[in-house]
Image (cartoon, rainbow, N blue to C red; front, side, top):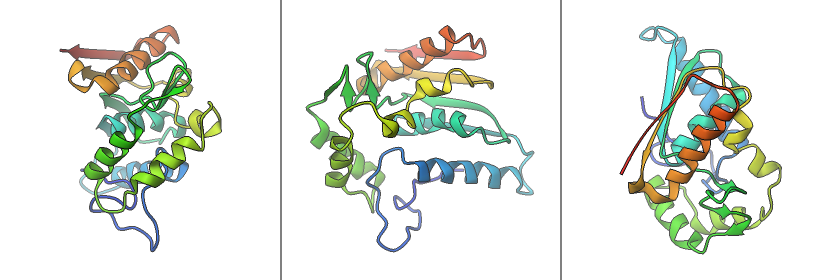
Length: 187
């Protein structure tokens, strides 16, 4: 099953709604609701595994913050980290904004499709230049302590903007004592 972020791709948006807030709390609740919906369908055995790449990898990891009861494993791929004091963030890295925000937001909106507003996406990032509650609610490191299900991550240097986040997450989970955490990485 493939799901689109509210207001993008083939999803149905509420009137006036567009994709402008990366990793919003509303989006996280939508993901939770889809997992719980899928678990009770007649074709389901009630166990749900979620996988996603790039932005979807970051969204997949965030699910650990809400802990949907039927989520049994996650597989984030090419995981994005938006803000990183470690230097791996693709929006803010080591506290500095990346110079490619305009290019990235335009390309990302091209992939996401109808409803994505590049200027609004950039403005949202610029409204949060420091690590605050916005970044905290989308920060993979906030999931490490409570990660109590299997995590299979993968990535490669072909997505150079995201590979740092993939490694940062894997190492962070290991340091948090989470042995059910696996990584496959290639060139």
